[in-house]
Length: 184
Length: 409
Image 1 (cartoon, rainbow over the protein chains, first blue to last red):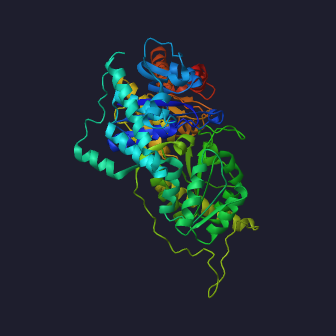
Image 2 (image 1 turned 45 degrees about the horizontal axis):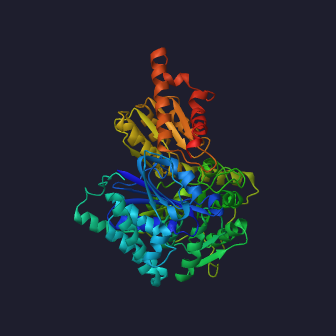
Image 3 (image 1 turned 135 degrees about the vertical axis):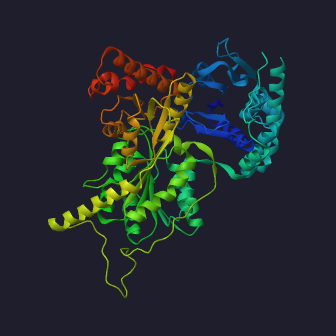
């Protein structure tokens, strides 16, 4: 079985990083995974996205017909990827930037998160994508929380050990928000 | 919000399997994995010039080659890079260059010289969409170039086409081995997706054994001088050299053809696809099988030599073949030559940097099946005779299907 998620927003919001955290966590959980960034011209326009496909067998197609989940951090990403989420799928919206905008669909779960505020609570308001990853993992459980924590320590710790705590804080804030969203 | 069922993936694995997987695998980017595999295969010298989507390969080499005491040169252009590489390879060094489509075109002249002079070399093409500068999206539109084109003259080069990052790493060692065994340039073709993506890979490498070359320019002190060249103005001599080359190509075709089959044993239809397209095909086949269609995958790993005998054999059991490529249809010509009209051969592809989705390919499969069934019920003719190169329903459907579905992004 394969599951796919797209992380999309502005360059600098940590979307490619966060996708890699998920990919590394999947490996730690013994899963197969495929990470592919959009490297096309849209990247030069300031938007960035990556797709992560997780599965229990070697990943087939690197392109998917529809996503099981989407993390959207800005309006262009919402417009582009909102319609591409499978019915019954999950859309995590950064309401700090998107305000009241939504994907306008009744056939998907829409989770609105004030990612900037939640990230600030974790210690660094820039870590919006890590917040969203927390909510994603809380809601879908494709990988374990422990593996995400370990992957964050590895990846953030490699270059900037001083931000590891903030990353873990942002992830915890996202997890909490996701758990609440799940129970609601 | 409605509670959502947790997805149970990975539960089939034992604790030991999980532990082994955790230990052995790391996440690596295709371009970087190819570069590291080349280093571990003993690459002595790398020459390159940056181009998307293979830039990380050059960047990895720039950092790692000096670390291991080897040669890295960022040349002034692709022409500079390939000709420096030609000079280095003539000394018997294990040499590699990499680029993406437009850069490979610039290197084409030197490939002909290498083929003519019997100089081993590995070239990696992380293909992007053309023609011309085209775009930077993934593509397989250099199939003709890789298997039949590049430079002038009667020559071929082995072309390896991995479908995953792990396979690309393994094939790097194979590429150096073939280059030295047959004294020929060898190409490895990936596409932008394989170059840019990350996958878990095992850090297991192979270093092909070094051979003693009796042709390499290593300094003539104490022995007769050697000459590495492609020029021969005597037609008789040049024909003999060409005959020897052709003999070498027959040998390569006999011994070095590689391909992989999947779900072919009971298949009535097959998709022929390589690289990234083969992965899309695999997903489409899994969906087709869920719907009861007996479909398999025939995946050439060497594009030249093309696995024509194997595909010819397979085509005898098939009702139809669908070729899927990230191009307007290039490999399909070799598929048709191998199949020799034994069954209909249809096509589906995307261009410009777009990749067909599994559902698109599934749609093309169903269209092929429908066509075969109609032919079988409306005529007693062999379906193969219904099909010729100008037959739009056989050739063009795929591309047009693609255009119609473009709105899906």
